[in-house]
Image (spheres, rainbow, N blue to C red):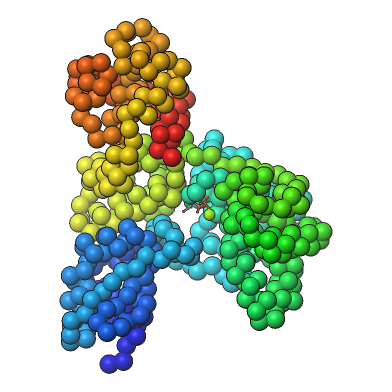
Length: 441
Ligand code: ADP
Ligand code: MG
């Protein structure tokens, strides 16, 4: 039997499909790809390192058995995480089916309907909607910036998708800055620069993602500058995203900075607790599964900055429950998330926590761990205990001893009280987020 890595892996998956639940297969195997098969090892590409751990832990035996039964000899399967943009930990929820159409490069599932609006992103969302409805008539260019996994790419596709639905004859096109550069290099090598220029300059809307990639890349900046001018001059819409505002992108040419600032520059902030909960609810609803309220709250309360991670943990939870055929509940959620949250816990030190909390509330570190019980220091002290419990693996007793030899029940009381306040008081919860972000970023 002549088999290369790709087809061998496909054969293996065909057999596997009969043995595992459909959701499991979709979650863990649809995003994989056979690479090469040499000697006795089959290399398989997976989206991220987490897959490697998971597959090795749970599936390596069954996969090897299938492989042996196909090849009639022993072989090894070796997983490799893909590091390129295309396979980044995209959530593996059931609605990723369609590949982007080559005409627009847009991903259909990134829509405004699926985008949860909160305080953190309302301005960016409103500007994006305005641009989608009336391209080149409102904010041009629209420059959206914000940290990793906060929804920039999603918004950008939503603009494209919505405007394509309104203006069917027009052509929007999405491209990550890095791919734009690769295309440009390819065009230069193959003497197709004219085609390249025409392709981009004939668009009605150009969506360039992750433009911070331009930093230090002179020829790319040059080409984007000319493309921008051509489109802008012809009253076509340009949308760009970046992880930083224009002025903070290292070595970005002044003329590009000024172009980017002609239109509107909007940012996306990390989501507050309420928005995180809404996002988790939306995602589980879209996937048609019922995730208990306390589990949603637990995830939202523990994964604070990155929406991609937020989604990822939901996906893992689903996969886990379908694999083990168990219900999703708080215990399974805690166990599963422990691996993510737990690994962060040890890196944070006591001194830093005390200092950050003290600074935030403008009290001294000594008073935080001291004996006095004045109102102004009681709450900060309880917050300190809460954060210590959340971010470290210290026991209640140990935490008590760090706070001037207090009893473990005092710590527990503080922890419960702050937990309740977080649930009930939005502003308070945002403040706790701020402190924790400071400590964990
Ligand atoms: P970025 O481009 O800023 O790194 P993405 O747009 O790729 O982030 O978002 C990461 C993931 O989080 C995507 O799957 C996206 O659908 C989801 N996401 C981000 N923001 C929201 C939101 N406000 N509502 C729903 N999903 C969101
Ligand atoms: Mg992105």
